[in-house]
Length: 116
Image 1 (tube, one colour):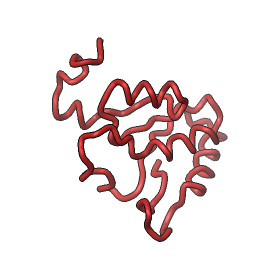
Image 2 (cartoon, one colour; image 1 turned 90 degrees about the vertical axis):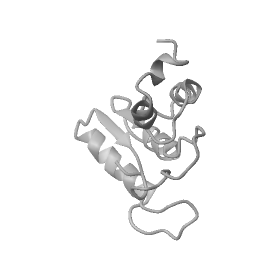
Image 3 (cartoon, helix red, strand yellow; image 1 turned 60 degrees about the horizontal axis):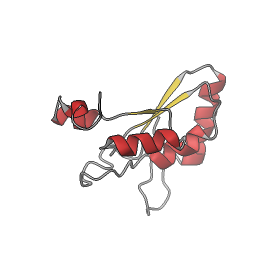
Image 4 (cartoon, one colour; image 1 turned 180 degrees about the vertical axis):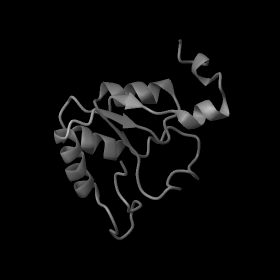
């Protein structure tokens, strides 16, 4: 579920986070069990550096705080380390984290520092 169609610091256009929250609430009422949160244009964040930016975490947190707890909220985008993932989970920003790009770059990524 895209959090917003507007990039940060741009004039509002398209879907806003307030509208997305309404959609998420309706999905929750319909019994959806899991909402994966992304946002903005398809290239948002693609040119950011390799730091732990978690650039969709504000959207995930807004959705998490406005839907029933039975709905799992998945946040992805710029999450690069175990510490960032644990922070997002422990502060209830989301229930799950996505780390696909680091895994695509290095299939052994989780064995390096994640203590699995």
